[in-house]
Structures are given as structure tokens and as C-alpha cells.
Picture 1 (tube, rainbow over the protein chains, first blue to last red):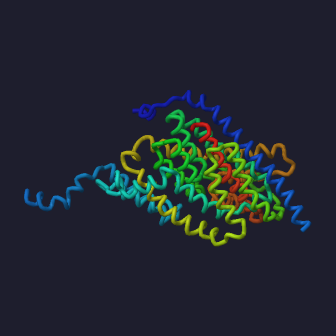
Picture 2: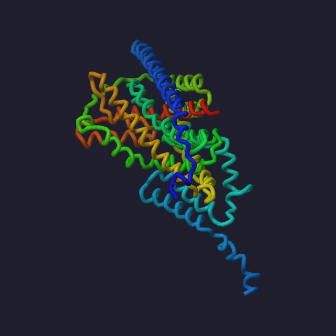
Picture 3: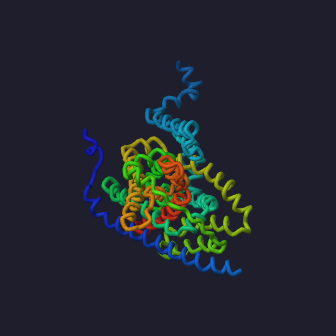
Length: 53
Length: 372
């Protein structure tokens, strides 16, 4: 018996769920860029303050 | 004969309950114990899981069932996600975000290397319903606690297989990643040098960072707030400088204690009837697929960035964006040294690796947002 016959497979689901891939990857990039920007900001703010001290 | 059966039957009647499925599960348990001891592959988890797999597959095992000790532990620590979350405090206390904070642009690679999760989600959805597909895809987070929490919250019935796959592939990162990295890069690319400028990071930054990450994750993906919150709480204990004793306890005693129970409790889900199915084989295959495409995503993203950058990046560091910490970072460093013994990539690769830890938890949170 061919392997696929052992298991139900719906290839269209791959295409349907590509939207989750797009949303997920976009979401994760946005969050990480936001974190990166805030890290630069706190690095900038608190490095200067510490140097003055 | 009847006399023996009547008076001594209790000594052997359980042997009659042995099935070939139980025997296969003992072999799997034995194999996990062998890998843990002989090959030192994630021994803290694979050993308890292996022993537990044998324990729960003994005929009429009293360890599981309604009043079984492992069932009680499962309900007390896994079904409500308590064990993996507490373990995250320990992991957070172990992580030094210093290399990442001194070079924040590395964070972007952590995001790219989560590609395998979402690609696997689409692929797994061809075989499983969407909640199970999402739970399987999160194996690509290369992060045990995240896999357990997501699979549990989404009500997946494949928790045992997912956890075993997640921890096994994490242990196999030194075998899985190098051939893929080599396949996707040229020798010239692997020899690219990345000078490291050590920038001092203030204590205030180190204290604010876990708080800020928790807030961002909480606003964007409320479902991930416990995951990221516990991880960052552990890190805050480490960095605050006034809780050294707690930090040490979290890193050692707490993490060890939870790990001890986590492995054997997960094994309660590895009964033959649940584990020996075509589904399990497909899950193991999809888990591998997720790890491969995480690596592909990270390396290709670095190569794409190189098309636009004046100072080129060694594309191998993209592969360290999967959160298998610190193995992935070390592998990239070692591969760099192999090509050029004076090329030290460790600080970059560990920075990317740490960003992968954050990104994988956020990916878990996004998946929970989508499907809960």
C-alpha cells in the first residue's frame, strides 16, 4: 500500500495556510525590529548617563 | 497445572499481557537511555524520558492510569504548563544577553531563523488539523518548554511525540546543521571575517532589557506573556545584582529539580497506543523538517542581506538563530575556525543564538494568538 494511502493528506491546506506563514514571519520581524530599536535606545540613553557619572 | 495456576499465577500472569508494542516501546526507551549516556545527547531529559517510556509500557503499569503517580505529576505540572514555565526561570537565569545587547542588530537573525516553524506549520497542515499542525511546527522553536506549552495550550494529543522530537533534535543540532550550512554557503563565504567591537553594556540596560521585552511581548502577543515573562524574570534575577543566591538556585537547583520531573512526566504520554502510530513517524519527520528550514531561513537571510551590505556578514551566523542554546552558536564558531583558524565568530554567533531564544518564544506566542 503506498504511504500516502496510510494517511489522509490534503495538499490544498498548504496553500490555504500560507497566510499564517506570511503573518507569522512579518509579525516576528516587526517585534524583533522593535526590540532592536528599543535596545539601541536604552543603550544610548544609559551609556551616556553612566559615562557622566 | 491447575494448582500452579491457582496458587502461583500471580507471578507470571502479567507476562501474558506483554504485547509487541510494549516491547518496541522498551527498545525506544532503551535507545533514549543509550543516547543519553553513551552519546551524551541531552542526558538530563532523554534519560528520564527513556526510563519513563519503559516504566509506563510495563503491562498494567501502576505509574499511569487515574491514580498513577505519573498521571498525578502530569496533571500537576504539565497539563497546567507549570513545569516548563518554572524551568524557563532557570533558563532565563542562565542566559547572558550581553553579546546581544552590545550588538543589537544581531536580533534580526533570530527572527529569520524561525522560518522553519511557519513553513512546517503549512506542511503539517496537509496531514493534521490546524491545532496539531501548529503544535508540531513549534518543534522548530528548538526549545523544549515552548513546545510543551504551545502543544498543551492547543490541546494537541501528540505531546509525547512532540516533546521527544524537540529534545532529540536539539541534541542532534551538531549533526543536523553543519551539512545544511555547507550546502548553502561557499568556502569563501564561510571564511568571511566579522570583527568584534566590544561595547560595554551598562547595568541599567541589562536590567531594563528583560522588563522591556516582557512588556513588548505582552502587548503584541498576550498569550506568550507567561512564557517570555518567566524567561525574563529569571534573567532579571540574574542581572539585578542583589539576588545572586536566588539566581544561583534558579540556574542549578530549580532547573535541575524541574528537569528531573519534566522528563519522566512527559514519558507518561509515551504509551505504546499513543506513540506507535504513523502519526508519530510523520511528527518526527516534520520536526526534522522544521530544524532544517530554520537553518535554511537563517543562512539565506544573511546571504540576502550581504547583497546590500558593504561590510559582509558571515552567512553561517544566520544558522545560529535557532534557539538551541548554546550548541548552535558554538557549531557556527567551530565551522568558522575549521575554514580559517584565526576567524573567531563566537561572540556574533552566541548573540544571534540568544536572539533566537527570544524570537522562538515570540513565535510560540504568535502561534497561540492565531489558533486559540
